[in-house]
Image 1 (spheres, rainbow, N blue to C red):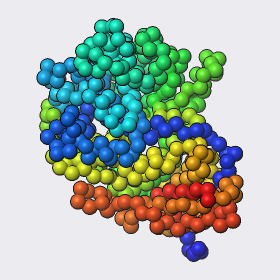
Image 2: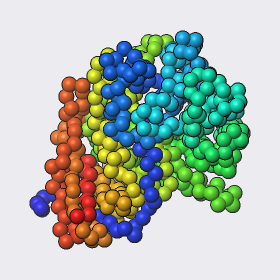
Image 3: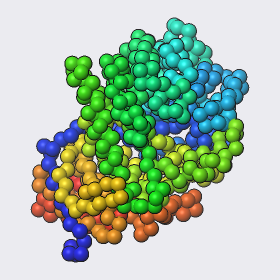
Length: 504
């Protein structure tokens, strides 16, 4: 290979196990916000709509992604939501002023409709309960409605609505971003900790088999981070299974090198939350390990200015409709690499969101749907990132960015699917001018050969996809080759790479 490229090295071994990958790290999120529901997954007048009004073209794209779990119905929306408004005969449901996003919620889609749709696209549901304007009573009643078989008021009410079998929702979020002043019903850490504990206690009496997620900080920028985690978990540690993390990044300064380095902040966030969890574990002399649910993450900044011009109190306006470019796709790949490298603690994650609202899938009302640039790294990780996460030992040249020092040009995660005898190397080259010649030591995987080298690359980091032109899409013309237990590959400048090896 040419000597003009930078050089890097990765060592991979079967013994370097991090953990089994929980497929739910490839989850997503649908909130009653903008056109995520109305005009996104649901549009009865669309030519592809099914008998229940859900768009068939969108269902196909969601199935292609293989989304294992979807968080619902919010988000900020849930902190003012009365779940009873969204069940029963549609014609009898009230229209409500939705205060989180200042729209009108028609309640044409509610719990049962969403459960049916999620089942059709092959996904479980992560249900959030309202701990903003409501609390213990509404949460336990919704759980009874969803999960209890029959013979009680709310289970029989569900049956009377045409859903005889329980939905069996396993995973539940105890509110949303309760540390945020933007949140309806914001709580102090002690207020939230007490309410979440009492809600969890009641919900576990209804269904002892559920999993519960305690609200963590809304981002690393919150002034209460990480004290929020320490105080709230002091209350909830014994009754929950996960603590949530939320993080969005933008490139407002148009500094691509710094933008692509933001996974350094992400790593700091994850490490800090793990440390805080383990401090509470030690403090309580607990034997339980707290897991992380990174249930909101993405790039979000493109649509901020447009959203200030939306008239209030409309139904399904085009809110938070970021049009993603190529550099956004690279950072999304970096997010996924970080989750895989923390597979021992990060067990769930939700790309926020799934359709139209800061999403990999976009639609036109009454028209086409298409894939944004970020669709592809998300797709690749979901499809090929199932198995055991292995720790790659990486030797890479580094650079200094505006906010970060010693940023490695090469980031990588490795997943070994022993049953299918497949090894997948996800590799991100952050260098904006030069390729990386990478040598990967795979001598511990005797008989494995390169099956495919997928590359997502573009000369213009600002290139976007539209309904008319898919400018950024992957190809399989990567040049990875395996010989004598070493894979050699050139990773193009600013590129996302998926090197797939199979046993011959």
